[in-house]
Image 1 (tube, one colour):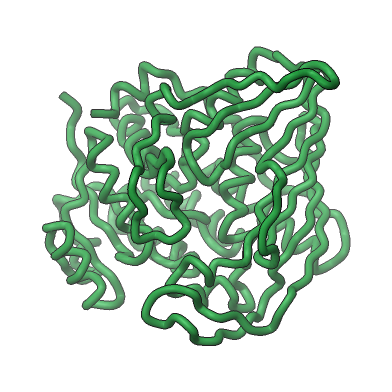
Image 2: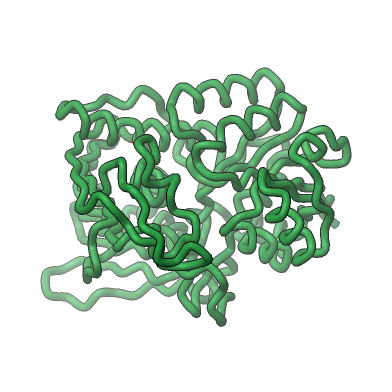
Length: 385
C-alpha cells in the first residue's frame, strides 16, 4: 500500500475544490490542514472539507506536514513556495512557478540546496489527450513536426473567476500568465524545449466587468495587454504560432494543430485531460480518431457542473495527478514530470513573450529542460485508486 503524505494547503480560493476532489482518484496524499490570508475563507474551506484551519505560519511549522500545496494567486506563488522550502517542505504550486523569472531561478536554487522537490502545475499534459499525442509523435507517425498553431481565445478571466483583478494588474500577465502555462507545457512535452520567441500585443478595453460571484457587475481596471500573438521556435526547429487572448467572444479553431512531414495532428484542449487526437496523412482524407475516453486519465469523471464556471458539465479532470506523481517520485528518488526545470523553462518562455512584445525584438530563451518522459500505465496505476 502506498504511503499517504500529509499535505498542507495554502490558498483556499477558486481552484481548491478541484484538488480536494483529487482525493477520489489518487492514493498517496491527503490534504489535512488549510490556511489563507483571509481567515474566513480558510475556515469555510476547512468546514466544507472537514479539515483543520490554521494560520499560514502554523502550517509551515507543522512537522507532520510534508508537502505544501500552494494555491495562492500568481503574484504570491514565489513567496509562499520560498517559505515552504525554507521550512523544509516539498512544495507543489499552481501555475505559474512565479511571475518574475529571477524569482523562479531562486526557487530552483533553494530547492536544490535544501534537497527538496518543487513541483508545479499544469499537470494536464499528463492526461490522456496530450499523452496520446505524445505517443503518436514518438512513433513518428506523421514524421518530423515542422510547423503548428495553438490558440486560447476567450472573453476573459473575469467571466469565470470571482476575483479576477490580479490578472489585469500591470504585472498580472493577462492570458499569458493565466492560460499560457497550459499551452506552453503541452508544447514542450510534445516538442521539447524552446529556443526563441517573438511577440506583439494589444488590449481591447480599459475596463472589465466581473461576471460571477459576490462582486458580479463591478468594473475593474485593465492595466496590462490582453491579446498576444507569438511565434515560438523550438530547439528541434519546429515553429509554432501561438495566440493567447482575453478579447475574443468565440471562435472555431482547434486548440493545437501540428503539421508534420507526413501528415497533420489535432491535439485536444491542453486545459483538460481527455479528448481525442485526430490524424490526417493525406489531402482530403478522413481524420483518424484516436480516442482517450478509456485511458485512466482520459475517462470522463465530471458529470455535473462544478462551482468553477469554466468547467464544462462533462469532461476528464484529474488535477492533482502532478502532485501524486511528485510524491511517487519522492519515494522512488527519481525526477518528477511536473518538475521545477520544466516550470522554469515555461516561465522563461512567458517572460520572453512579454519582453519581445514590449521591445519589438526576438527574445532568446535562456533556460532549457528535458522533455518529460512518457507517463506509463504502470506508473499511473501505482498512484490511482
